[in-house]
Structures are given as structure tokens and as C-alpha cells.
Length: 322
Image (cartoon, rainbow, N blue to C red; front, side, top):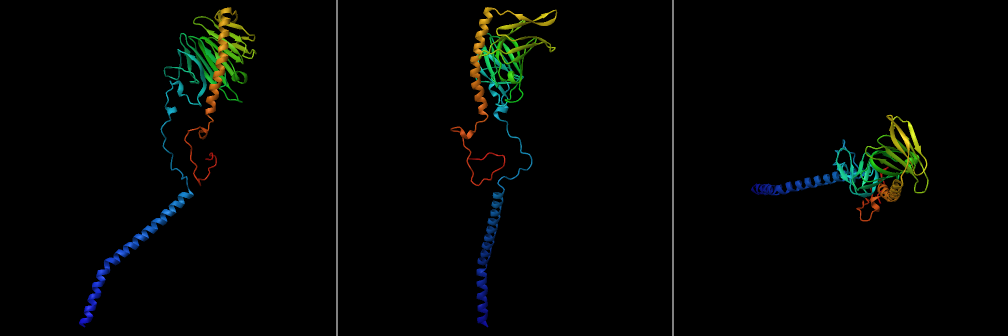
């Protein structure tokens, strides 16, 4: 009996001694089970993520910060975006400036972009040449001013242009809008319908406005029609080196034939020749700006490249990555 009690006591002690080890083993099995379960859940999440690489956004994403172009001041002539520009400065001699929107004037430089609504002007001794998207060009002499009231050129579709000459001597050579669309030049007293030609407009302070017609660079001669504010046709020019003076007679505007002096003829001839030269320069600037709209950044040396992602599913409507 005593021997049996001794064996029972030894068995009890052994059980107590190994109890912590059993608990540890159970804890280890629990941890292993939890780890396996976590791995399975993680693998399931990975499979779901791979099946849906572009999760649908919830709600409307918050508006991001404005771009540098969006933040650019309206008075900065270089701040025009490619989509809003309608022309470029082809030549300039200071002082020459632009007033844009409600902001003050800013000095212009060659290559600056021109927008619809811009007020362009030169000071004493200044000159300015601008070329629009259809290659129509304007040349402002000293102390001249124009406003780009409207300009829309779309190749192969209806186009229009309205430019106001408010002061000084301004030459112009018309291009595509005058040939295929609706081009008008506004003066303080009349509206000119431009039918594909070259001309010079004088708006001297306190004196009648003069309108003159000259040949294009290829020798062809277009037509200038002169309308009153009431829409009445006052006259038209169809012969080279002829002009009309817009004068009020008995409080009614009339277009009177103008005699062009030799001094005026020489000055106008130089102005027109400069126009043809700046049109060639402006054409290059316009083409460069328009081509930038279609440039693929992956074709620019040194530009950061978009890496290809193996296994990335294609999305209809989006360009393929290289």
C-alpha cells in the first residue's frame, strides 16, 4: 500500500512538472494556426487585388492643386496656354506692350503668344509684328494700337476674325480666314471687309481714317469693302495702290477716293515688305507652337519615360505603354 501511494505521488508530480510544457505546446499550435490563417487571408487578398488592379473610386475625388498655367496671371504675355493662344509675336522693337483682361500692360518679346481680347500697342519709336494661326499678319508702326476682338481659325471649317485698329498706322496681310471665312477690321468710323489681300490703315488723331490696298507677295490683288456702322456699303478697293478716306460730310460718313503721295507710297511699300518678312518668321513660330500640341513626350531625348508594367491589363480608349 505504501508503495502504491509512492507511485501515485510520483505520477502527480510528473504531471505538474510537464503541465507548463503542455500549455506552451498548445500556445505554439495556436500561433501556428493563426499564422496559417493569416497567410491564407493575405493570399486571398493578393488574388483579389490581382483580379482587380484598378479598384473603383468611392465618391468624387478632391480637386487637386491648379497647374502653373492655371495660376498664371492674365497680364503675363507668356502665360497663354497652347489652347488659348491665337497667334505669336513675330518681331518687336520697344516700347511695345499688351494689356490682357483687367491687368495692366506688360512688355512683349519675340515669340510671346497672343490671345483673343489682347490690346496691343506701341509707343514712340516702337514697332510690333504679330502673326495669327492662319498666317494673317499685322504690323504696328510707332504709336499704334489694335485689339484682337475675336479670332477663330479651324482648318477645313468656318473661321472668323475681328481686329480693331484704334490708333496709328497698321499694315496687314490676310491669309486663310479672309479666303475661307469671315475677316473684318474695325476702325473708329467704319468696318472693313477683308477679302484676301494686303493693306495699310491710317488712324491719325483727329483726322479721317485712310484705307489703302496693295498687292500680295505673289502679285495678286484682293478686295477691301468699307461699311458704315449701319451696314451700308460705302465703297470698295479692288486696284493696287489705291485708297479711300473716310470723311464725314453733312454728318454722314462717306468714303472719298484718296490720293496717295509719293512719301506715303514709299513708307507703305517699306511697311508691306516688312510684313511679308515677318509673316515668314511668324509662320515658323505658329508651326512650332501647334506642333507642340501633338508631341509624344516619349520621343523627347532626356524626357522621363513611362515604364512598362508586365501583366498590366489593357483598358479600352487608353494608349498602350511601350
